[in-house]
Image (cartoon, rainbow, N blue to C red; front, side, top):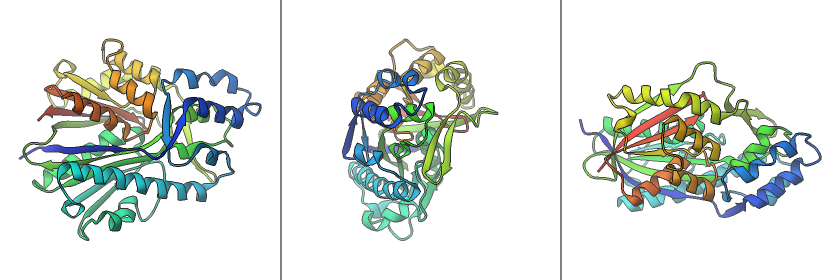
Length: 348
C-alpha cells in the first residue's frame, strides 16, 4: 500500500500585528493594580521569546467588555478567513482546485461553531457537494501533528484521493481582562493567531512521505492544560508548569512512540517541534538530548508569530522544507490531555 505524502504546505496569519511591547501595555492596563500577583508574573513578556504576533482583531478590541457572543462571532469570521487564505495557497501550490479535494480535515480548538468551519467556507472555496468533512476539536497545541496523522490515514485508505488538512486557531480571543490569574497573564504574553493548510495524497512525489505517527497520553494530567468555559468565553488553564514536565517526561514518551515503529532517537536527522514558549523549547532540547540552540527555527517562529497552537508546528515545517529535509524528520507537539503526538517524515 502506498503511504501518504505531503504534496503542499501553506501558512496564513490575520492582518493585525501586536508587538510584545503593546501586549505588555495591554496586560498592565488590564491587570495592573487589580491583580496582586501581576508584578511577579509580568516578566514573562520579556522572557517568552516573542517579539510580535498576529491577531484577528486589533488590540483595542480586547479592552472592551466582551462575552461569549462577541468572541464567537470573531472566531467564526477570523477562522473562516484564515481557513480560506491558507487552503487556497496550499491548493495553488499543489496545482489543484477545491473541486479536486475529496476529504477536508479541519483542526481547531479555539472556538465552537455548528455548522463547522469547513461547511461555512465550502461555498466560497468551491468544494464539491460530495466532499467528506472531518472537523476535529479539543487537541489544542498537539492538533497539528495529530491532525496530520488523521489526514495521512485517510489519504492512505483511499490511494489517489486528495485530502486537505487545515489547522486554524484564534488563540488571542482567549485574552480575558476579567480573569485575574497567572495563567491568563501568561496566555496574553504567548498567544497569536494563524493557520496552516496541507494537501496529502497516497501517491509518488510530493514534499515528504509520512512514515509513521503516534500519540501518548500521560495518566492523571488533565489539569495541566485546557480551557475553562463560562459566559465570558474560553479561559486558559495552565495549572502546572509545562517546561519542567516536558523536560522530565517528554523524552521517554518520544522514545516509546518511536519504538512502536521500530525507530529510535538515533534514527532522527532533524526535529520539527511545536514551540509552545521559549522555556518549552529549551526543555525539549534537554529532553531529547539535543545541543542547546539546535531548535533555531522553532525559536524564530515563536519570535515572529507567538504560540498559535495547532498550526505553529507547520510554520516550523515550512522553514524546514525551504532548507531541505534530511532523510528522516521527527515532528512533535504536546497538548491538553496531557498528551504528545509525533510523526516521522521521510524526504521525498
